[in-house]
Image (cartoon, rainbow, N blue to C red; front, side):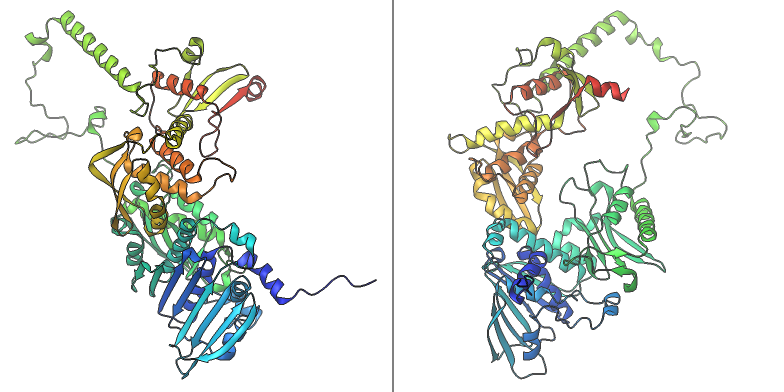
Length: 615
């Protein structure tokens, strides 16, 4: 019987390894820039074409390679970073596995030009799908110039499932930002389709953060610094009042390497508990410096998952220093003297007088009685006037609330009109806090998430408006244009969305530095915050998740979902009984009321058996 176990060819083994190391164009950028950093470069330029599909080029002024090293560098497990297993615990370089270049050339066409400063001529190497096509001498500048062309050209399935260019370019920019933050002393440049997105001079960490994410972040940063025998932690966190609901900037580094560490992230979030709403996240930029022998970076091919030998102790140090920093730099709470009782109320002397320490100062005659005034003698008339004014105010308030923040169209039925729910059901609705409501159901008790319900209602309404063939939607010009800072990473997405946004009534204009001016919004969402609208739409578009067989364009669904999320009632806003009834009735009238645009349930039903178990 013939043997059935065979040794895989190197080209096949490299493609298998590439499946873990090279996941998308951003992975190539990460590996090539880290190689340039390890080569001692002080200037690195990243050039991208078509979001990395056509070209990813990294040019550096590092040490370069000889002709022999250039050829050997593309072999699996060839590296200049380590020599023996013990070196894994003394790592001072970004790379060490010797798999990145072999994986890249296995799924792309690579051209390398490199020369050492001491050489008079360099070498040019061309590889396609792990096969060396040519290697010739060539005059070039000292350093390396790596060009990766037609990524995944020989793996059609991987190339087919790449996201659209705006999303892939956004991922590349995010990866570039991480590399720029961990190497602030280097001069870094990012160019996409001949447009310079970033040109970063050498700087300290604070200036690098400002260069990447905008000047508006400068006043929000507070420094973190501690130095112990176990770990040194330094960097910046943001003040609690400047935390974000989405797209918070959260970066952790260890020994100059990017790190993903949920345990440390949770410790930071716990420091903000009670200071920020539950749906907001803090931004932070923290670097850990530890003995290399106490960490293990050889966990995953991406080298982002890192194990700490003294994880629990470092976590406690991190929690203590972040908590102390927040307390030291946050403003002291203001005291509301109007709500203090007599025992706690401070004694404030009248101007020009000296207060006795044993009793409060009184500046009124001892026999003064304010109720002896003749203007307050007719109590019946005063009460009637008060009752009349109160009723008018309540009527006006109810009339205003029925419009539900002005987000309901004019032809919506009045809350007094017959609704899909019976009167008994409407009267039986019980508010639970500011976000939930309960009402009887044939199966038990129905609990409704009012915010998600309103999102679902608005999503259905906006989607209908966006997909109707009635021409462009009417726009509402803003008296005072809004201004939104999205960051450079989202510029490719918003540039791609700009034509679609114009069709539905948005008028936006770039201001430079990742900021945009909002001059008009669709009339159907004129009650929503313009900045929140744009941010929500960009967030939804960046996710790029959509059913392939959907008859509606994915971008239209994303825009409708973003608009619904921004225009829906806030979770902390207390709704009136009329508004709750209106939301419940409209939700019941939808064809698919069970889930909001994000796929989360709008309500749940607790049956009798479940209630019995609770009791």
